[in-house]
Length: 375
Image 1: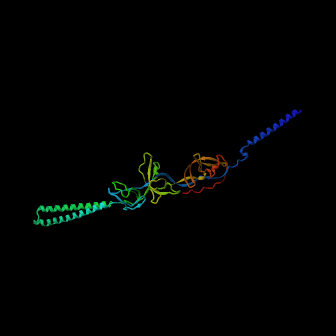
Image 2 (image 1 turned 30 degrees about the horizontal axis):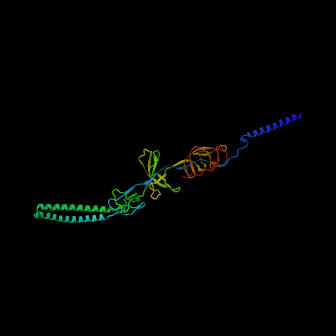
Image 3 (image 1 turned 90 degrees about the vertical axis):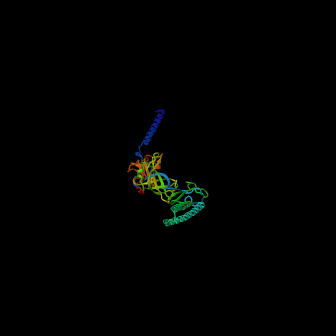
């Protein structure tokens, strides 16, 4: 064999060997997953939906307002205020003096009226004595009929003047009593416009009083939810700026008999306790306690929020996970109600879902039963 042919045979042998190595390596790459098991991405704990009895609530918003307000003013006008004895926030009693009006003029008028009454009473006494003599001596001819008639008329006129003078005294005494501006009821002063030295005017408001210090929450409830609320139902209000966990317990006093035709909402009036931190004018949120109901719950750690939706990782046969969209409802502590998207017996990843992807292989290490949710 010539050297040229020997060289060509060597090159062919090398090419065949290279082709064999390529085919062998290609077959190795095409090997299926069963030939080399995939390594689990994460060790996880599995949980299932846990039934619980949770309180059913109805959330609402509304204003806090005074149960009733009384406008307090002076009964007389044109007199100067000399003393202001109450301020905003003061708790006052019924009949307590809040302000005083200058009474010098009225005291002088009362003294004059009393003097006129005394004069009228003296005149009436004299007229009565004359009329009595006419009654006694008239039948004996001591007086003419004209004189007797005059004495009787004078007696009646004097008696009428006494009545008028006494009414004038009573009127002046009443006006003098109105120089004391008093509280019509127990309560809290919510506004004050009275100032020393100002003149009282007809219909002028000097003070505003929250009667009894009672406040109420006026919650707005839709017409469809109105049938679930009744007087005596418990409600919990969270005032703005309150510390976490701070709630005010109240009771439904009444439900408005009408619904606003524009908003289709009705007002529910909830009485608040006296010692609450609520203040009139606040806007507060709250909820009505409608009773208890069953719920299927998962721990908060099993819930994922992605792209505005709620997901869990369901554990499929073969310990692979599938990302499942769910709907959630109420929350209590670290438990969340699942209202849709999962069957009752489904197993889901209890925590660590943020490190998983759809279809990952996992290793389930335990399946503890979740604790009972608080009632």
